[in-house]
Image (tube, rainbow, N blue to C red; front, side, top):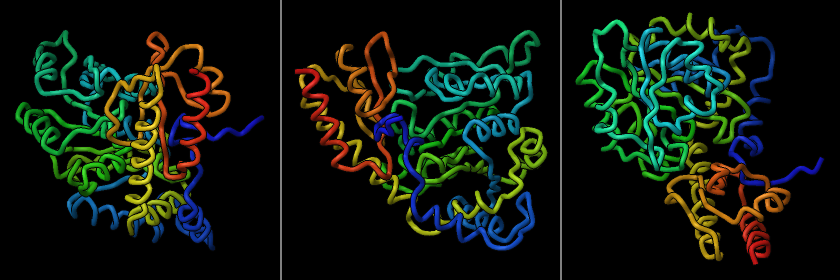
Length: 343
């Protein structure tokens, strides 16, 4: 099978060499399993350095697991979670959040992947009414599934409202590094410090082989998470191999370098394809995603050269994602093929 480079997902990218080295370096001798090792202890300290001494972090296998555990920690099965209709928990997790938490998802229609307080307010009713799922968690995604980014002030406004009515704010941060890089702020500034109660922190899309983290704003929110993680089959026995990756990513600026490069490549790709006739960008390029409408008849032949996904087949809208290993040569070749196909 032909191994195509492409723009399907930052999940399709290779593992960053420094991450591979970290895994290899951790692969020496024996270490206590299930997170009782020195590397995991060090990695948790690194997370505290980034997000605050009062935070608690738990490592898991993947993003779906992180989101499911976060919801389970914040809500009971009779609760509801409000999110964007484009949210990963709503569209791309095969119903796992609803099945495993028992909570009902209440999706908000959005044209840009972001939700506002005014939209959230429409779902804030039925409190105390036993026939109605009780709203408990608001979930936002940073960067959103459409590549857009919440400003720090936008997150604070949502957090302030959510907390004022006794609810929690969850953030799906699968691409939080890309958001922080674009905003020029710290990882904490655009999450915990802005009022997020629980953050699903993404590593895989930013160079890791596997592994995500769940960051709780305080220990009280996390008091039962070790049990929930185990019951959710997300407790990795050889935890040091996840922890070592996060050490390599977060001790220095690898997370930022990777994200900045991916964002830069997306800006370049968006700029180049927008010059081509009959290509219409549907979202402003703010992180590492480019969304565009292109002629239907060029989609399949273009996918045969550089694989990518169709976002909305009815509109012929496609999604092109860049990653830390995307090159300018990739973009030049891709845009050249796209131009030739359209002409």
